[in-house]
Length: 144
Image (cartoon, one colour):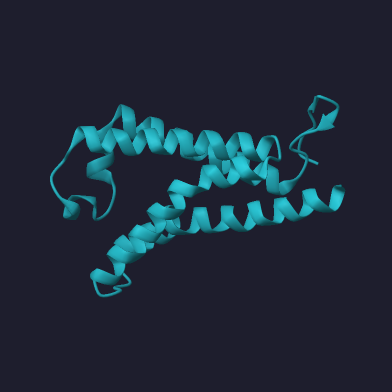
C-alpha cells in the first residue's frame, strides 16, 4: 500500500494502480501549467510543433487548460478509485494521442525524433492510463 486515507468510512487510493494514475494526473496538471505560463517556450521546445503552423498563444494556452482539467480529473479519479472520473480524465489525452497517430500516418510513418517524442509523451501515457483504469474497475468490482 502506498497510502491510506479514510473518508466516509472507506479506504481511498491504496494501491499501485491508484498511485500511477495520481502521478500521471499530477504530471499532466504540471504540464498544463507549464504550457499555460510559458506558451512560447512550449511551442519552441516540442519537436515538430512548429511544423503544425505559426505560434498561436490562445490555442496553446487552451491546450494547457485541457491538460490541467484532464490531469486533475485523472488524479482525483485515481485517488478516490472513481473509475468514471479517471476515464473522463483520460478522454482528452486519448483523443489527442489518436490525432498524433493520424498526423504520423500523414507524415508516412517515419521513425524519427518527432515520433519518439510523441510515443513517449503523447501516445504512451494515455494508453497505459486506460489499461490501469480498466484494471481499477475490475478490482473495484471484485471487492463488492
